[in-house]
Image (cartoon, rainbow, N blue to C red; front, side):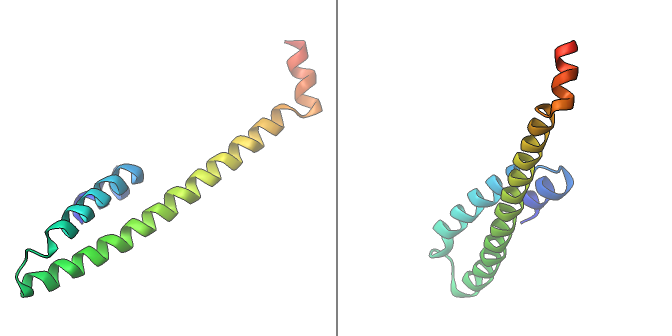
Length: 91
């Protein structure tokens, strides 16, 4: 749980944190059935937390992508405004 948080929150690389979290989650699920019952409960709890974080990061990344594409569209439409066209033609 710590490494994905480090990438997402401290290095501001949520996509990298998400990739690591998904890899850890898959690995944990694969090993879950081999654990004794007391360890199984703890591991399952950690995996649920990791899964919740994965969903949260996916949502954050998706929202950031939408925001970035909206900013791009806004910037593109600004370039096509009549005032900017006049400025571009003089260049």
